[in-house]
Length: 106
Image 1 (tube, rainbow, N blue to C red):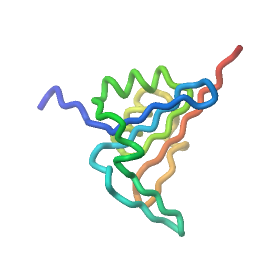
Image 2 (cartoon, rainbow, N blue to C red):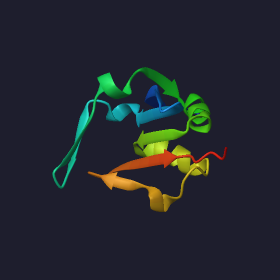
Image 3 (cartoon, rainbow, N blue to C red):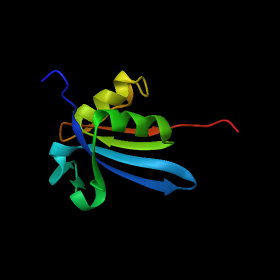
C-alpha cells in the first residue's frame, strides 16, 4: 500500500482562545496505560470526536497552539514535521506521549 495513511482519533477544542488538539493513534483507543501509579484511559469518548488521516493531522498540527499527542505514529509525524525534538517525547507503558505548546509573538 503505497498511499497508506495512518488513522487517528482526534478532538479539537478551544482553550483560552487558542485551538487545542488531542490526537491519538486510532489503534490505541480503548486501552489503559499504567506506569508508577499513573493511569491514562485512552477513551473513545474523550479522544475520538472524529477519525482523521495523516494529512488532516498535519493540518491540525500546523493550525493549533496546543497539541497533546499519544502513540508512535502521530508522535513520529510531529517529529518528522520538526514540531518537536525526540528529547521531548515521554513514554508511559511504552507508548510515546508528546505535548506541544506554541508560543506566539504579539
